Length: 136
Picture 1 (cartoon, rainbow, N blue to C red):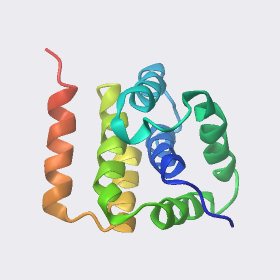
Picture 2: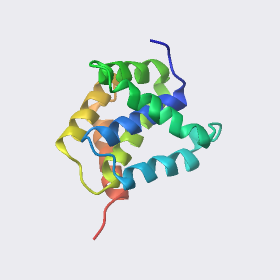
Picture 3: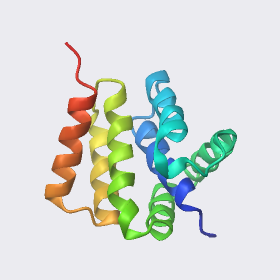
Picture 4: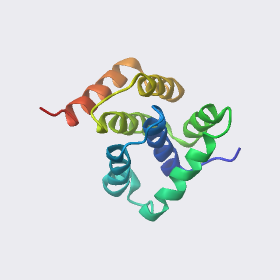
């Protein structure tokens, strides 16, 4: 298993969040595209590479141990200063369609543990995502 870039790792974190409930909604996919186009960590990432990066992540999920392999790749590719970022982006994807399903919450817990995001930081990140995506 070869490594991936920090850009790919962040995209994998978002794609896995979207796929966790086995339904990648339009809201989630649009949000991933918007994040890649606007978040500073992606300024040097060619947005046209997003579909192939997302497909690479999806291909991993076809393997029996695909989720574990993807989480290991994410963990290995991210420097400590981008681990909270990966968790925050995944939370934004979970919140994008207005519902957090149990499978998505389980994925976030797995990601948090793989990336060693402490509980207090995770709670703050989650609360921020809820606030950003709140509607009346």
